Image (tube, rainbow, N blue to C red; front, side, top):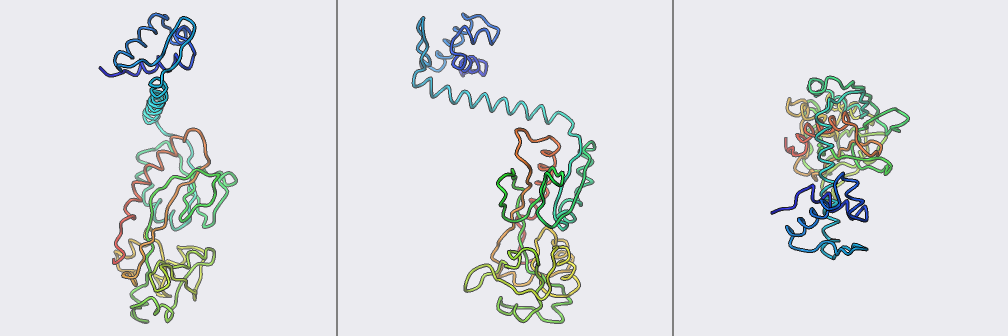
Length: 303
């Protein structure tokens, strides 16, 4: 026979209360009933957990081992029950989400109708900012951040990752030719970023490494601006797959130097302030959007 959860609870309660009588009072049972439960548990386990005398109780080595694991099991059961109850409730309330404009437009907005159909009582507030914000100052529940995280005061949940592709429009390629090596990029107009030097390190393999530093001829602070410049044939750009996969599929942008791509993928995280229990509306959104972002993790650089 296997130990039951109620037996584990009685055993843990006896140890934490310090006596059978105190545990019996807490459980609303008689001391004799608690004592019988302990004996039954020891019989099932075929070992002595507690050395009991009229004056004191001492855990055996087996009892110490069993006590720690029984506590863990009961805590996990409590957590499971709490999560089940929370899932049965209807998530509601205002949910304030902040993300860079490209991510908001290409990875969140397309799924809002589906999310609203699932959770009609959640009131969404969508804000865009291409710079890192203070969540409290901006009254934000969740901020989506792409790239390495540095703020240790925030709790972060990984939502997946998105590859970076080197891209150009068919018009640009027709006018300027297609580079066939990383070194040939020096002969082309390159579009980069003004705010983040790391985004001007393109994921390309060459003799000295796998991050090619560029000197942009045109720079912009927003990825969406860079995307539109590339679409208009103004140069070659390096952009995340989540915001360009439809352009690639439609032929508006073409992958350049795919065979030299190092395979680097930008990590995507949701960040929020640490708390003891995540609000249900936040949990629902994170679970939902994470399933949508898995589509970007395994794309083909040669597309």
